[in-house]
Length: 268
Image (tube, rainbow, N blue to C red):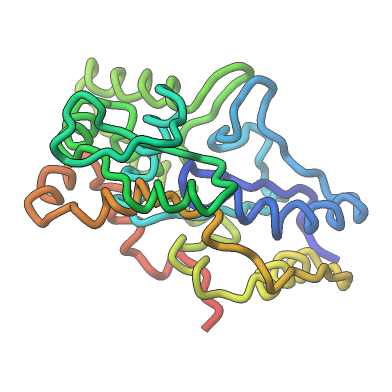
């Protein structure tokens, strides 16, 4: 019999969590609930990303995904632009369009929309400005592991408050707590695995860890392109070595985690 009595998906933004939740975790969680496993949900009023759950204990099973830090922040930026300014369907933005430096279409339902996204360019200069002065985004994936949202709080706001407190009190991010929690995560994936793994193996792994023999069948016909944000990937392709040097000091801990391969589960 498994020692685990609860399950928590620590959903870090822009790591592929929506895809995994829809195709793997939702059906897995239905089986877990039938076997009296408690699913730890984020508090009311929190939008998807609640950080480290307050009810995690020694009997909790934690699953999470971590992404290449530069890919993660470019994806977050493209998402943020789209959410703040809204969606468009007919504008193609180039590097020489300083007054209209965005195009982001989230729910792409047609080939026309996909083609627009593929030809979209976000301003790299404005992106670099944003990452320099948006303090909440510094080591944002790490902060999702050490911070906890209460009801009606959003991780961006919690992260901003935490970052400013560190600055005002001349402190550094609590690396000891971060690594203690990293080692506590039961199943930790690098996001690049999502493009080459068999999702059936992932579902079987979670259920097996709970000692549950019942299985789900994960579809082999998943449209991965549906989840690709081409505005983000186009921006990422234009990041150069000198840009990485600028960004590195804001992503120090995230980069260290991503490069520590022994933290992550592998099917090989």
